Amino acid sequence: MTASAPPPPTGAELPRVTISRGASEAIDGWAWGLIDGSIRLWQLPQAVNTLWNLAFEQGQRSRDTEVEQLKLDADRMWLRAFADPERKQFLIDRLDQAADLANRPDVDDVLDEAWRIYLANLDTLREPVRLETTEDLGTTCDHAA
Image (cartoon, rainbow, N blue to C red; front, side, top):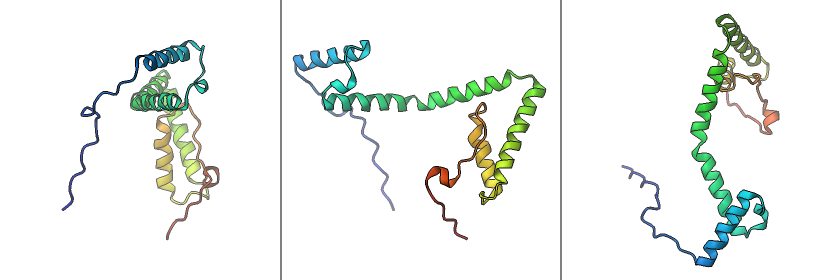
């Protein structure tokens, strides 16, 4: 029997970190300087630079799901802007492109690859359908028989 993993820490149980008034004023001034452009990030102490970058990345990641959903919605609305016959032809052309790519000699499993291409491109309707080769990715694939 395996034990269930403990829940990830929330930090709620940790005490609040405090700094001196002078340090607080300096950091506040740097933050406003970054915002108004009077200070560049590279000018700050490395520890503050690291904190800024981590906070930025965390903030960006926290919005990824919403941004992805908004991109899907934008693509759906863009496609709906077409008249019905044009929309139907556009989607048929997309499927034809995916099928052509899946029939390439470097694609091992045609059906799986066609499905992967089709699904991967549903959220990028305005982008051309393309398939990266293993050479493009800089990796090799070893498919066992």
